[in-house]
Amino acid sequence: MTDAVAALAEIHARIAAAAVSAGRAADAVTLVAVSKTFDSAAIRPVLEAGQRVFGENRVQEAQAKWLALRDDYPDTELHLIGQLQSNKAREAVALFDAIHSVDRLSLARALAVEIAKQGKAPLLFVQVNTGEEAQKGGVMPRETGAFLTECRDLGLAIGGLMCIPPEDEAPALHFALLAELAQDHGLTRLSMGMSGDFETAVKLGATHVRVGSAIFGGRG
Ligand SMILES: *Cc1c(COP(=O)(O)O)cnc(C)c1O
Image (cartoon, rainbow, N blue to C red; front, side, top):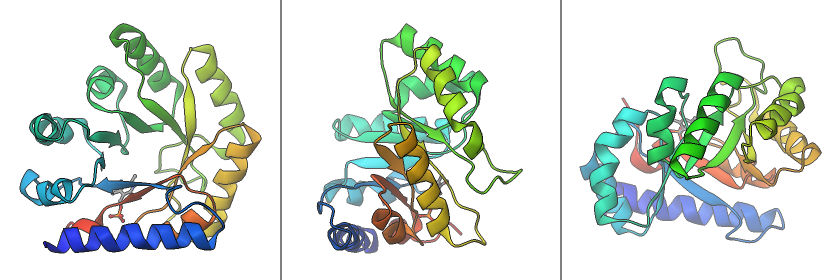
């Protein structure tokens, strides 16, 4: 067993335990294994161990690795978790099964065009900038409702909300805020929680946790 395979099993167990302790089903949470910066040789054992949902943050890097990996593991689900430029919407819609970073109107427009053209509908999450940080993507919490309405007017089906809490703050308040916003707007999916805080996120209702370094190791 590689280190990553052992770590994967441990993370799955910790997610299930956190879910059960919160009164949720053990399988209520999808683990998105974040493989950004790791090469195919590092990813293959994790696929071999049965993991089928992976996250990447760059379109080009994902294409370079996953077109071949997916030939070998066709039931793999690929999630884009990083910021997306509107001019890459075509490639992103073609490659990814889910996009967690819908964060502005220009991108929503570009995605709507591509989804209609390609007849393909990735699961979409609106990223909310819960910490209102200038350097981070995402709509402001108070603008979430208006942005969701704009997405709906474009014909975009939004499946849930995503956040990345500020590094220097306790994540629980941010996860709770995201859960409240989702509930206010009738959304059932919550993409929140990373290597350092996924158990907290699961307790606060995460349906998708994005875990990288705790599985694959440090990114150096
Ligand atoms: C890299 C990344 C992750 C995974 O982070 P780890 O701390 O390595 O688990 C999760 N979400 C996003 C948006 C990322 O860019």
